[in-house]
Length: 209
Image (spheres, rainbow, N blue to C red):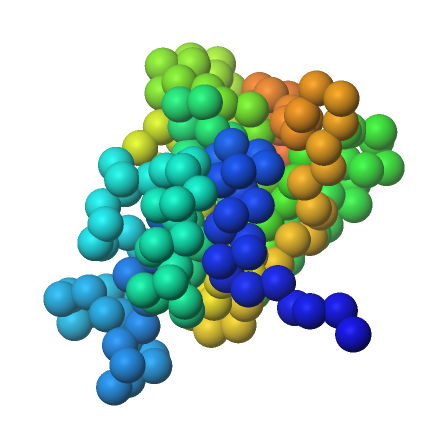
């Protein structure tokens, strides 16, 4: 019987096999599984954000990662995006599923995709905030519901529980090649998503960004 990977397994794979800096999310309150364990009673992403340790503590050190999840085995796995780590572009789940079908049909090579019940995140190669700013400035229109996870950001990774309920999973798993994990450039992904939106029937309403 195949053992189901634990959150610790996932965190160690990210940190050691892929060299992605990770840290545990704050998680949910033990007394109330719907409430975030952080001090904010109105937290908008319950359980699915850094708190203690803070984002700057993210690490690829196996001993540190093992220690964190030994203390809190149910803690969500967070990727600290940017720097040498992957960044991401996310969009609403229904629009993302349709966009990915269109991009696959066009022969667009995509990297790993993280899916939650409400949003999908397309992982891309690291980029700077300056580079992202130049990219967005060059576009006549960028769908407002696109979100960017770059330097100083974070992303919830499988098999963590999503903040709104349900679970995060790999819609497209990372695949290691001879040069490591391949990631597309942010310009290519944003351009393709904008084209998919504007080229959809109804002027983009089908993708509903």
